[in-house]
Every structure is written in structure tokens, then in C-alpha cells.
Image 1: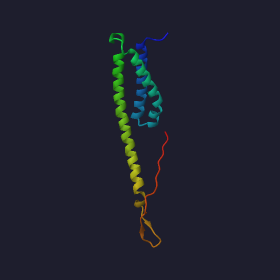
Image 2: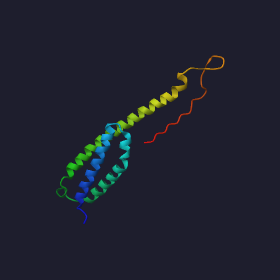
Image 3: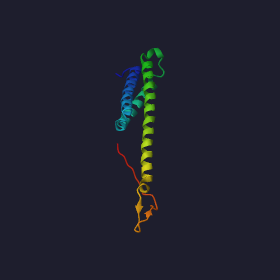
Image 4: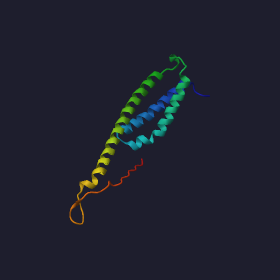
Amino acid sequence: MTPPPEHSLAHAADALASVLEQENQALEALDFAAALSLLGAKRKATISFVEAEKQVGSLPAAARPGIGARCSRLRTLVADNRRLLERALKAQGRVIAVIARAAHSGPEAAPRYGSRGRPVRFARPLALALSTRI
């Protein structure tokens, strides 16, 4: 026997809130690898919540006890999640900018001398490739 739709929505809301709390904690600690590892669970919890909400959407508010408080909690968690993700993107942008400046100024920062003892400049920039795995 399947549970009533309002119980499914409550369960889905709680599951999504749990994943968001974990991700927010990881982002707060700047542990991007841990936050990224929750992507699959977050996607699954979000899909479950949307599907459960579709089933409950037609029920009157009186038939959905506790759902309002759960949705309010989700709104707060989502707002925090957005703020923390934006902060993470800014941090990532700063790191990339530092690397790009270092790569661009690398050869010119250290003087080079040719065979006759005169300073020599590189004719073309050095190639640079970055790769990260999380």
C-alpha cells in the first residue's frame, strides 16, 4: 500500500532539506569536492520533491499538515545554498585570475640573456594548460 501523497511530499521535502544542509556545510567550509559529491543526491531529491509536489498540489491546505513549515525551511536552505554557490564561483574566479596573471607574466618576470649578454624577450607566449579532477 502506498503512503498518502502528503506523506510522500513530507518525506521528499525532508530528504531534499537534508542534502541541502550537507551541501551548505561543505560549501561553508570551502570543501568543493564534498559539495560536488552531493550533486547526484541533490538531483534525485529535487526530482522526488517535484514529483511529490505535483501529486499533493490539488489537496486543500488542511490536508497537508506540516508542509508549510517544511517548505519555509526549504526556501531558507535554498537561499543559503545560492549564496554559498555564488561565493564558491567568485572564489574559483579569483583563483583562475591569479593563475592566468602568473602564467602571463612568468617569462617576463625573470630576465633572460642571449649569447651576447643582452636581455632577450620571448617572441611568443608560452603554452599553458590546466586540468583539475575532483
